Image 1 (cartoon, protein in one colour):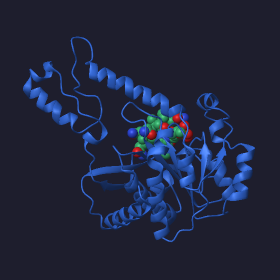
Image 2: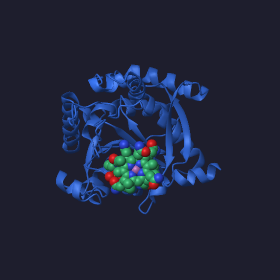
Image 3: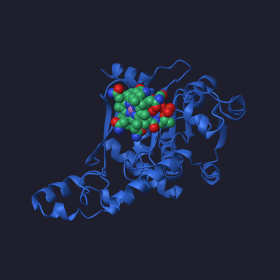
Image 4: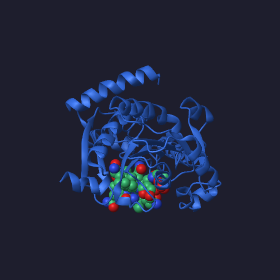
Length: 301
Ligand code: B12
């Protein structure tokens, strides 16, 4: 999306968020140990049609009109595979083909690479982790949580020290999530944080990273907050969903309960530009309470 348009939308969303006027769909930020809600904000609904082509229910569903209406109603509320019908004991051909397509997309996105052009457009430099290749990344999640020696050197050489907010981007488990969403989320988040007057760190890209890589980076750069935009493990509904993991002063030894996540960022979930603007308000809260995750909930009480 064009940067000026992102800016315009971000401003509109920030002002709407502060008026607390947005209608309908609720998005939740959940702390790490329970499902308790840290915050709630409302986003406009995304219709199922945006996510996938509608498949006509099978003949045997049409035979039972009432059930079919109920199913149609339920189907319209979720992209999950419900009420897709069958042909004898087997799935319909369309259902089966869509399943095969979605499965292939999931496999592709886990092993795919983020194109250089996306990183160049956002002027991000790249660092690697101890996961030297894809196979190692999958088998050894702990390697994805540690920077390579070269990565540490580059970060020390190129980044601003002690920023208020450090934004990081990593492919994680979905390269497609980065390709499809990161520009809009990043530009909107950057805009939102700049509006609030926060000093931003030097953003960069981490190849084959895991969420807890933020601890080692926190140790090196000592930011107050890290926001890590990372590709989610793909499901059979979306292979391009992005998550934002946040933590107040992450350092080696940070416990999982002190992290937060805003997940499901993609065109069929939380729209990327809205997500960026919303994340700005979450960062503001983390900085105000000097805490994230469970610690933030405790301070809020
Ligand atoms: C895999 C997974 C898990 C695994 C993680 C194990 C692992 N090593 O990968 C397990 C089963 C342990 C797990 C547990 C939980 N999860 Co979980 N998990 C996921 C899932 C399916 C994929 C995550 C992913 O792709 N991460 C990206 C990769 C690259 O990260 P990673 O470094 O390999 O793994 C880290 C993250 O996955 C992170 N993580 C996983 N879940 C959660 C939840 C929270 C709140 C936080 C802060 C971090 C976190 O912990 C891992 C280790 O550091 C997402 C669904 C989604 N669409 O994202 C839900 C999801 C993130 N989990 C969720 C929840 C609620 C939880 C729990 C709080 C459940 C509970 N009540 O106990 C716990 C909290 C765990 C924690 N780390 O604090 C929710 C978060 C809701 C939200 N905020 O929108 C999601 C979105 C599922 C959902 N739709 O409800 N989870």
